[in-house]
Image (cartoon, rainbow, N blue to C red):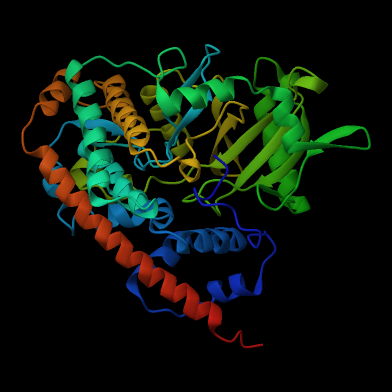
Length: 437
């Protein structure tokens, strides 16, 4: 998932520290939402935070994607705890319309499933559902859908979720059983090859393959940082069954996602099985879950112990996905934990910018997302403190929860839009202010 939004990437979004981004870092805006966002992003790469802010300013849905911490910080004060009377389940912590996508499992098949677990935690099952429904309200507004069409998306997701949960049996979506838009995506990505990925992401320089630096997805690292990452990758590779597979060919900084922009992240080109089958690793810093940090003390105490946040992310991904990818591991760089994955040619998402306007097509995809969410929770049942499958089945049949979820999501969507407007005004006022030079 390389884009910062479902909106097209603007050409002015380059990595060079622009005058506007320097103004952003010195902002004096006193809006509460701005202060909270600034506090959360403190310590990240300032030039990437500036890029993140520009993306968030363009659209309420992208703003929502980039501020999961606001959602969880607000949860109790906006009445979310009334929704916590639900079984404990493994939640991805940042469920929204663009946190589903295709990837290749360790059995060689391409799947469509949840694909982001940075904020994952053990929490009431309603937490992920409320966040997804809020995202649907905001994305539908951006897509120009009518109120009736938004209601169709909400109903589709909840119908898919409750029906799948009530069966008590986890299923999956791969090409042979996928339908509609998802099937088209899986068919298209399965034709992609490793060579195509390498041709897109690398160049030949003096007879050797190196990663392409375009300042949209990658950037050059300072020498000291590059050396530190290389040493850590080398130690990681030495512990693997085939150390030669992990021989380093190149390392650059990586730019991807929205909420995580600014955290340490690297693309690492390794030898793989040879010159024509080199691989690219995504090495991403793992931070505390925004969901976990806002849980009540009684729920926070029930989180399973892990060595670090990378281990938490990996454990939950393996629990919730139908078939996890083959290369999914953890390492440390200095004292910081990182999640290591392989960049795959089949990895992609449903591009909302390419939606053809057929609401039925979109609703079927959203219904599948509801099913996938239920199946992920069922897979994680009775593991690491999660409640049982029977508890989830009973929850699916509970009356009244649906209407409470919808009321909460619609109300919070209004709040998120108001926060976005405040944020955008702060960003615009600071960018227009004199630099003091």
